[in-house]
Length: 307
Image (cartoon, rainbow, N blue to C red; front, side, top):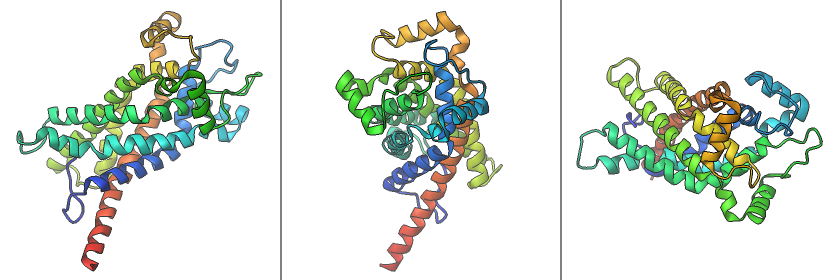
């Protein structure tokens, strides 16, 4: 991504990976209730017996969840969410610059759009395969409810890993990899490439300096573009991952069932919380990411000078 540290020394790959992981975890903790609301809205209408409660809007869903199942339910699945960011975001964001340099080596002075997209595809794909089990557990814990006599499938994060592995096999932990791969390829390319391009344009045209306001604007635009493109795949992914064995025969079957039973708008269920989540998540993550990179490089330079 464009821009160097305050001292014009580019951050190392290790600094980027650590900064991305920490920044993503901070963003996840702050925005997790929005993610839980998004999941509940996305699975609403999937099964008539799942719940008689109807969620309406983002704030309505959050309020309803807090009243009926307790405030802590908004953070159900957070440990798996943090595990996901450590194994997923740290790679897809932290390795982006390095992979981008690999694709643009010997071709261009600065990386072109093709190199940026290729880097986003590569880092996003690798990160999905590594972090998919955490995604499966996170979604299932967010989706399960104890209301109306329903017994929760899982009592906690590690209980969920164990039950899924023993009842569905190890492949159960990678359930929904195809839609999640599609979703995250779209998200990674749109999110990181849009942020990179916006930041580059703002800095090069001297509209904003490479600092917090620039990072804020770039991240917010990236969040909106990402939500628009990824929403249909995200809903299908959530439905398929959360489904019990046998409910859907395949990912296409899940999508067709949604279309025939609920109509095309079903693919955009939870759009508002998705944007609120992705927009706020992007802003928090990228702002923290940029600041952490600079501070870590400053600390490293200070230690180097001291020795």
